[in-house]
Length: 141
Image (cartoon, rainbow, N blue to C red; front, top):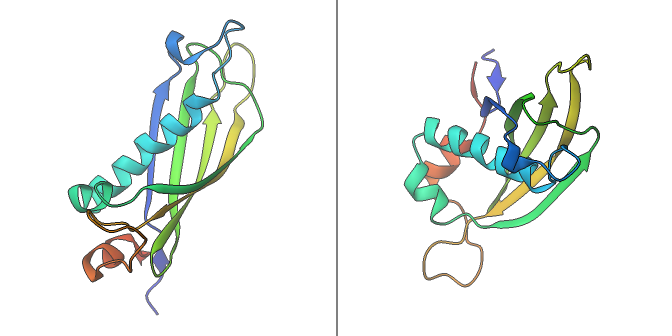
C-alpha cells in the first residue's frame, strides 16, 4: 500500500533586531510572520500560489508560546497541511529556537491556522476547486 505524507514545508532563518522587543526577546507577531513564510513555501511548492493566496483568508489562528527567541538566534519553522475540509484548510505548525548562547534547542511555539476558501466576489466560504484540493491533500511519500 502506498504511504501518504502530509504536505509540509520547513524554513530556517535568524531572529532579526526588528523582531524583538526591548528585552531582546521575540515579539509575539514574529511567530505568525514565520508561519506565513513557511505556508507561502508550501503553497508555492504545491504550484497553487496565485489561486490560493487570492482566495484563502485566515478565519482562525491559535498559538501556544512555550519559550522565548533571542536576537540572532536561528529558528526553524515547520508547517504541515493537517486537514482539508469542504471549504477550509487547517495547517499545524511548530517553531523551534535552535541552540543559542548556551541554551539548548527548544520549541518556542506551536499551533494551528485555518484558512477558508473565499474566491473573489464571494461573500462566504465555498468548496475548494478540485485542483486546489488535490494540491493540498497529503501526497504519496
